[in-house]
Image (cartoon, rainbow, N blue to C red; front, side, top):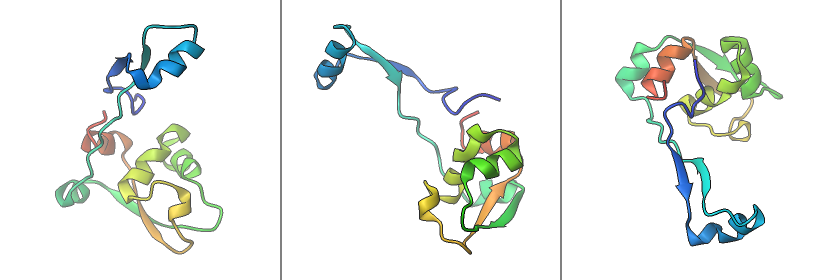
Length: 114
């Protein structure tokens, strides 16, 4: 498995907006950075094809802990967040039910990241 940036373009940016940053980095001509990844939201048929488990959010829960528990890799915390439409833990209240896709490779394919 790879990171969520596996298919993401690397851009060389020489935009005037970043001139201050280029000067700060020794007057470099351009900055390299990742393009903003566009992840698709799974539709109803995508969701029906994925095996998920319901999880009741508790006070103190963290996405990275759930990713470690279900995927054995904290780097995939964002999969759970994206799948449920809650970008941060602050967006979820204790007692809310979220779905955790169980097959990481399959959900990455659905999100068109893998």
